[in-house]
Image 1 (cartoon, rainbow, N blue to C red):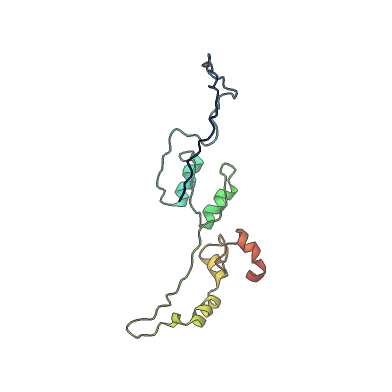
Image 2 (cartoon, rainbow, N blue to C red; image 1 turned 120 degrees about the vertical axis):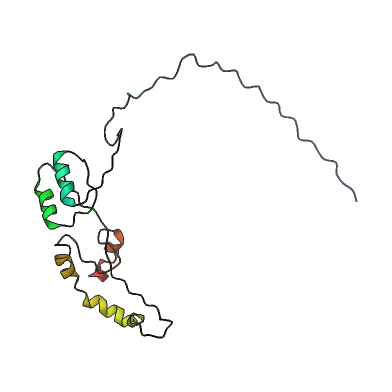
Length: 162
Protein backbone atom coordinates (compact mmCIF):
# COMPACT_ATOMS: atom_id res chain seq x y z
CA UNK A 1 0.00 0.00 0.00
CA UNK A 2 1.49 3.28 -1.05
CA UNK A 3 1.22 6.41 1.07
CA UNK A 4 1.75 9.94 0.01
CA UNK A 5 4.24 12.10 1.73
CA UNK A 6 2.64 14.98 3.54
CA UNK A 7 2.83 18.22 1.66
CA UNK A 8 3.79 21.40 3.42
CA UNK A 9 1.65 24.48 3.13
CA UNK A 10 3.37 27.36 1.43
CA UNK A 11 4.93 29.73 3.91
CA UNK A 12 3.05 33.01 4.27
CA UNK A 13 5.04 36.01 5.17
CA UNK A 14 3.43 38.49 7.51
CA UNK A 15 4.49 41.93 8.47
CA UNK A 16 5.20 42.94 12.00
CA UNK A 17 2.51 45.25 13.37
CA UNK A 18 3.53 48.85 13.46
CA UNK A 19 4.50 50.11 16.89
CA UNK A 20 2.01 52.53 18.39
CA UNK A 21 2.78 55.30 20.74
CA UNK A 22 1.43 55.27 24.26
CA UNK A 23 -1.22 57.91 24.86
CA UNK A 24 0.29 61.11 26.12
CA UNK A 25 -2.77 62.31 28.08
CA UNK A 26 -5.69 60.76 29.93
CA UNK A 27 -8.98 60.41 28.05
CA UNK A 28 -11.27 63.39 28.45
CA UNK A 29 -14.77 62.76 29.83
CA UNK A 30 -17.40 63.95 27.40
CA UNK A 31 -20.34 63.90 29.85
CA UNK A 32 -20.74 66.32 32.75
CA UNK A 33 -20.63 64.82 36.23
CA UNK A 34 -23.95 63.43 37.48
CA UNK A 35 -25.86 65.41 40.04
CA UNK A 36 -27.44 63.33 42.77
CA UNK A 37 -31.18 63.04 42.19
CA UNK A 38 -33.84 60.36 42.36
CA UNK A 39 -33.44 57.29 44.50
CA UNK A 40 -29.84 57.81 45.58
CA UNK A 41 -29.90 57.66 49.35
CA UNK A 42 -27.25 57.73 52.01
CA UNK A 43 -29.28 55.90 54.62
CA UNK A 44 -32.43 53.76 54.85
CA UNK A 45 -34.14 53.31 58.21
CA UNK A 46 -36.93 50.76 58.63
CA UNK A 47 -39.42 51.13 61.45
CA UNK A 48 -42.34 49.01 62.56
CA UNK A 49 -45.77 50.61 62.52
CA UNK A 50 -48.39 48.95 64.70
CA UNK A 51 -51.35 50.46 62.86
CA UNK A 52 -52.03 52.25 59.62
CA UNK A 53 -53.36 55.21 61.64
CA UNK A 54 -49.98 55.56 63.37
CA UNK A 55 -48.21 55.41 60.03
CA UNK A 56 -50.44 58.14 58.57
CA UNK A 57 -49.78 60.46 61.52
CA UNK A 58 -46.03 59.86 61.17
CA UNK A 59 -46.24 60.51 57.42
CA UNK A 60 -48.05 63.80 58.07
CA UNK A 61 -45.48 64.88 60.67
CA UNK A 62 -42.56 63.96 58.41
CA UNK A 63 -41.17 61.30 60.75
CA UNK A 64 -41.36 58.69 57.99
CA UNK A 65 -41.29 59.11 54.22
CA UNK A 66 -43.00 55.94 52.97
CA UNK A 67 -45.60 53.51 54.27
CA UNK A 68 -45.44 50.64 51.78
CA UNK A 69 -48.20 48.45 53.07
CA UNK A 70 -51.83 47.85 52.27
CA UNK A 71 -54.25 50.30 53.85
CA UNK A 72 -57.38 48.20 54.17
CA UNK A 73 -59.26 50.34 56.67
CA UNK A 74 -61.71 52.67 54.92
CA UNK A 75 -61.30 55.64 57.35
CA UNK A 76 -57.50 55.55 57.00
CA UNK A 77 -57.81 55.30 53.24
CA UNK A 78 -60.17 58.30 53.15
CA UNK A 79 -57.77 60.31 55.35
CA UNK A 80 -54.84 59.66 53.01
CA UNK A 81 -56.96 60.20 49.89
CA UNK A 82 -58.26 63.57 51.09
CA UNK A 83 -54.89 64.84 52.38
CA UNK A 84 -53.12 67.39 50.23
CA UNK A 85 -49.80 66.59 51.94
CA UNK A 86 -49.81 62.85 51.23
CA UNK A 87 -49.55 60.95 47.97
CA UNK A 88 -51.45 57.72 47.45
CA UNK A 89 -50.52 55.07 44.91
CA UNK A 90 -52.68 52.11 44.05
CA UNK A 91 -50.90 48.96 42.90
CA UNK A 92 -51.77 45.40 42.06
CA UNK A 93 -51.68 43.87 45.48
CA UNK A 94 -52.13 40.52 47.00
CA UNK A 95 -55.18 38.35 46.93
CA UNK A 96 -56.86 36.11 49.43
CA UNK A 97 -58.45 32.82 48.57
CA UNK A 98 -60.45 29.98 50.03
CA UNK A 99 -58.89 26.65 49.18
CA UNK A 100 -60.29 23.18 49.68
CA UNK A 101 -58.35 20.02 50.40
CA UNK A 102 -59.60 17.41 47.90
CA UNK A 103 -57.69 14.55 49.54
CA UNK A 104 -59.28 11.22 50.32
CA UNK A 105 -58.95 10.50 54.03
CA UNK A 106 -57.05 7.36 54.98
CA UNK A 107 -59.43 6.70 57.89
CA UNK A 108 -62.35 6.27 55.46
CA UNK A 109 -64.29 9.35 56.58
CA UNK A 110 -66.01 11.36 53.87
CA UNK A 111 -64.31 14.50 52.62
CA UNK A 112 -66.98 16.33 50.60
CA UNK A 113 -64.34 18.34 48.72
CA UNK A 114 -63.14 15.21 46.93
CA UNK A 115 -66.14 15.78 44.66
CA UNK A 116 -65.37 18.37 41.94
CA UNK A 117 -69.03 19.40 41.72
CA UNK A 118 -69.11 20.27 45.44
CA UNK A 119 -65.98 22.40 45.08
CA UNK A 120 -67.56 24.15 42.08
CA UNK A 121 -70.81 24.72 44.00
CA UNK A 122 -68.85 26.39 46.81
CA UNK A 123 -67.57 28.93 44.30
CA UNK A 124 -71.16 29.89 43.52
CA UNK A 125 -72.16 29.99 47.20
CA UNK A 126 -69.46 32.47 48.27
CA UNK A 127 -70.74 36.02 47.86
CA UNK A 128 -67.57 37.82 46.82
CA UNK A 129 -69.28 41.23 46.73
CA UNK A 130 -70.33 40.77 50.36
CA UNK A 131 -66.73 39.93 51.31
CA UNK A 132 -65.45 43.03 49.50
CA UNK A 133 -67.99 45.32 51.17
CA UNK A 134 -68.03 43.87 54.69
CA UNK A 135 -64.45 42.75 55.22
CA UNK A 136 -62.53 45.11 52.94
CA UNK A 137 -64.98 48.04 53.20
CA UNK A 138 -65.08 48.40 49.43
CA UNK A 139 -61.29 48.58 49.04
CA UNK A 140 -60.99 45.30 47.12
CA UNK A 141 -62.20 43.78 43.88
CA UNK A 142 -64.00 40.44 43.71
CA UNK A 143 -61.93 37.82 41.91
CA UNK A 144 -63.57 34.97 40.02
CA UNK A 145 -60.63 33.43 38.18
CA UNK A 146 -56.95 32.86 38.84
CA UNK A 147 -56.18 35.66 36.39
CA UNK A 148 -55.71 39.20 37.67
CA UNK A 149 -57.64 41.79 35.66
CA UNK A 150 -54.60 44.02 35.07
CA UNK A 151 -52.49 41.32 33.44
CA UNK A 152 -52.37 40.77 29.66
CA UNK A 153 -53.68 37.21 29.89
CA UNK A 154 -56.92 38.49 31.37
CA UNK A 155 -57.48 40.66 28.29
CA UNK A 156 -56.87 37.63 26.12
CA UNK A 157 -59.61 35.66 27.91
CA UNK A 158 -61.89 38.54 28.94
CA UNK A 159 -64.85 37.19 26.97
CA UNK A 160 -64.62 33.87 28.84
CA UNK A 161 -64.07 35.60 32.19
CA UNK A 162 -67.22 37.69 31.74
